[in-house]
Length: 255
Length: 246
Image 1 (cartoon, rainbow over the protein chains, first blue to last red):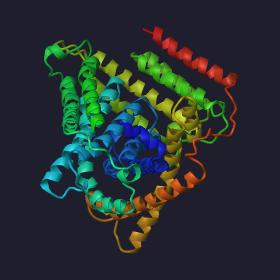
Image 2: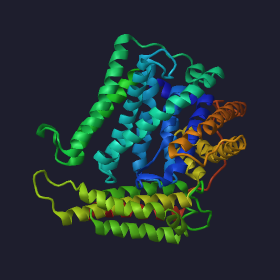
Image 3: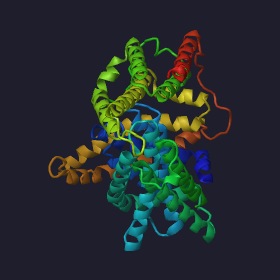
């Protein structure tokens, strides 16, 4: 996680953060008029961009996705739910480059079946973390039930990212590498963690995303065993989702 | 779609200090979150509506009616259906409808409060308030820079789209998926152009001492005055009142 703080000292990374944020917002805004859940979420082909930028610019894309989503929200009204959108998009862009870097040494342009499988896993993990965060936050605030929103978000994020991100990466990754603007070129190579740390980090990140998203859905529709059920539905959801998100964040921090 | 919800007027709310406005925004969110009954939530919504009218910012609510009206009906329906009833007990339909109405009024209050804030506060004022409230300067800088770059990207995208159209690329025919796919030759040049701009901007910032590490100077701004204190006191009073409302 140190690089997420360290990048703010690098002027080029700061400017790339602004570029990622504005590019994300610029593609989000025209589609605000195509709502899926009015006032809460809409058709978002722009959701491919945090994944693309994550592989290209790493930590700059993580902050850029969070800030870009906030700027998009400036056009549909600022509210307390935007805090969860900020955190959700932060995790959505954090998972892809961290998990890919831990599991593969090749370029993040899926060409082989193994690369495609890994690509699907990293994108769906990020989308699951975003869905669980936003779904939990907006249920607690009373906007939309978790069972509705989290599933809409994960489908919206995964489909757009899995369809559009590989196409964009195939074109953009070689060009950005040529001009030496990949995050590794700007901030220096990342020291390789030990194998134990890698396995633990990847395991925790994926398990945490599963617990938060699947467990959250189970809690939201009321199919949990009685021992997991707390005093209120929101508390039950918090007991399941928050530890899952914490596990995933800890796993990503290890990578 | 206009690229800002800000209305350049000279109302009493426009003149308030941005820190006071951010704090009152948070207090009103807090108040709306604590209320669970439709009647006090409706009162709070009417209050926010009255503030919007007095700040001559009603056009922002009119502009966003395409969002606010469907949100209300959608929220009432969805929370009436997803009413968190006690497990095993029969669902009280009247209580479910009342709950749905409360959730819809809460969401409308959140939206209206956010709109009146954005209609009376520029992005620079917002970033200034965040910096004064402890958010690092560079984060505020990124927020304002990104906000300023959005129209630049739009303009670049329109230019590239026109250039591609001149070369014979048809954006108007075919299925939705086909038309979206045709925007690939627009996105890539805009992205690469943005990268070039980012690189130049980083150099420009560096030569102006962005990373010099010295204490930063800024234009002096007026401090918090009596009007701001009154606004803050009102926000606190509303938040405290919601704690005693059953």
